[in-house]
Image 1 (cartoon, rainbow, N blue to C red):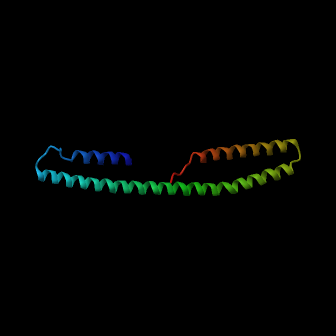
Image 2: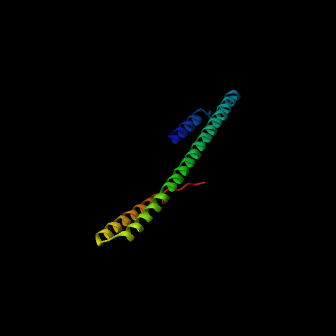
Image 3: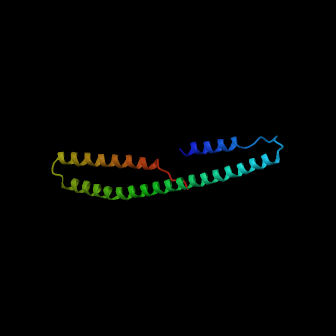
Length: 123
């Protein structure tokens, strides 16, 4: 979306610049004025794009931190539940159920950690 705006603004600024072989001083001055105007428009567009990227990075950082803060208690409760279940198991059925739940929990946490590995925040 932003790239299309940049390309449109750039092509418009290039189209309005007069050819260099023009000898009319007024036409050259108008072309220079138009060029300066387009440069200022592109600078403003670049500033807006930088601001949007900065806001997106900040939002991504907040989301990553919030998700990490949410997963830490889940992991602690899951580990405590697994240990308590393993200690309180009476038969081999109980051990199988607790072990299966623990295995599913570990697989889920590994999957979540792989998802976080894909999230990078460049400075």
